[in-house]
Length: 195
Image (cartoon, rainbow, N blue to C red; front, side):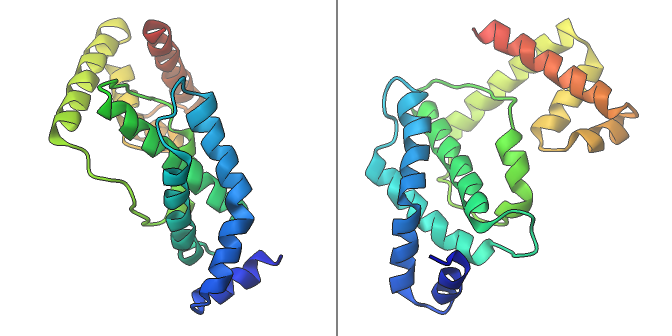
């Protein structure tokens, strides 16, 4: 199957080709669902059929967002977007169960940001969840300030806003390796405290 031919056909409103693409990517979708929702959590927080619906809609959006001048193939692009969407669903499900957690690991989101475009598929959070997240983050920042100091808080703040290590290094007049070291140090400390 020629993926790019199929993508072109879908862009020309050939919905039969869209069904073929959905079937072609179904094993990958199932693998991602099993990895994130079945293996990594003790209970299934998102049913397979529900995840398929998200995946199909995301595939349709990805077809129109993908640009051939990028380094990634379409399959890699779709896989990364789908993983990002799966983690969004997982976080949302965990919030609904009042298991608020703050993750400093933004690797997937950072890698995808230049390819993901303006796809907006996430549901709006309830105000209560946003307030709880903000309070938890303020509490964590105060702990970081007491243990590591103000410079570390600046690094974490900028990193949580999605800035790259290079940007943070330029902004705070530090080296990239120093910023990376500071970020990993705090991340390891928070992981140790959580466990």
